[in-house]
Image (cartoon, rainbow, N blue to C red; front, top):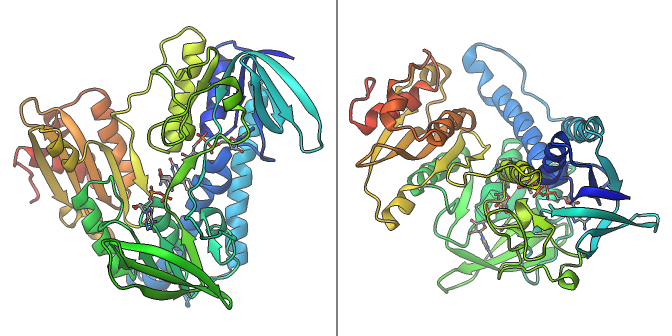
Length: 466
Ligand code: FAD
Ligand code: NAI
């Protein structure tokens, strides 16, 4: 069989790349080693985590907030088996959707493990032991990432779990200890806290969510603490020992000092992810990796071997589904002779907790360290009519604009619907808008988006409602 393009991996990077390539007339095939398409994101990442975040948020609302709205319900009972089924139905709907789209675009899908035998040749080993070779002009590697492991700490996906096990728990742990105060730890920690777990987060650094704007992270930590999260910051985990049905975790101050222990029913290891290139045969074909195991690519996603490209979590950059998708589109367009590209300055990121945290562009810390002079405009949700009436006033919008040109350089939101609100900032930044452009754009009343407009007005110290 001979193709213009074979894509390895059908996560958000791979399947989107294949569809765009097929739209542009390339004869395209995909190879996937899971039983379903959609990669980490649809099977064990974005989609199942958001299903559980949604369901657990509804549960907490019904338990703690409905009465305030005059809705009388008896205390909600948790049917975790049904909640997990709700999650799985959502996952299945999404993975089947990808299967349909691949068929619709006449893309040949092969299930099995791919290995690059040589540039232009992909070997597919099926679970049944079958072996076939696909001939192709180009190969795009979109094999994603895997969980980072802690040396000496075995993940059994029952007591010591990765995100995959944390999405599958059959009962609510009484005590959940999360290692790592990053996105996974705080999202999945939120799910189980809402359903009744006592959650303690042990983080190596002295702050949560490294990389996010520090003021936002600080406010977020305060809000999470009010919700019942316990934080042990600046703490290094040295041991996790299984004991009875649970585990004992030992940690000590990162700077050195006396060790402490903490008991857990479940320990979630969420300390990052690593690129996944195992079994691809990269050594053999001579594809270069960087010092963190990521496939090295140039600005056109090309590796050092002609005809082999790579995108998504397996290359440098934020490990986000939408970044992988945009790279998939860009590389397909490049292969079809067009000018595909990704604007890495405008990639939004969202933490889907309550409230949500969303960000696009530079943080204050990044601007300071680059020596860029900027003005900041901030507007709290306590002063936004819609947030007030809905009683979801925790958080604020912060806009950072160049002190000379007023061009928007970064927007950071913590608050209700932050993950949706961030996109007006992303569009504005993509078009090179100034904060005044955002401030002069009429925003419907009463909406949460008015807080974005007010933050833009606040850059020039002329917010109306503050
Ligand atoms: P992947 O989605 O990892 O897909 C790679 C695919 O390649 C896999 O299906 C794998 O089986 C296949 N593969 C690997 N090797 C081979 C081989 N040799 N042969 C054949 N197939 C192979 N990102 C967000 O933007 N928003 C979120 O809300 C979000 N939530 C997340 C929640 C969790 C719990 C996790 C773990 C991640 C989350 N992410 C989220 C990150 C997101 O899942 C990844 O950034 C995204 O999936 C990367 O896409 P990808 O196509 O590069 O790789
Ligand atoms: P992360 O990189 O977001 O956070 C890991 C945290 O663990 C960091 O705070 C780090 O300082 C800490 N850490 C590292 N080693 C440690 C140690 N030994 N002891 C204690 N703490 C330690 O990684 P996470 O949460 O595992 O997520 C992986 C990736 O998945 C992220 O890069 C993210 O991009 C993606 N993701 C995105 C989501 C979203 O967009 N909403 C949701 C979930 C995951």
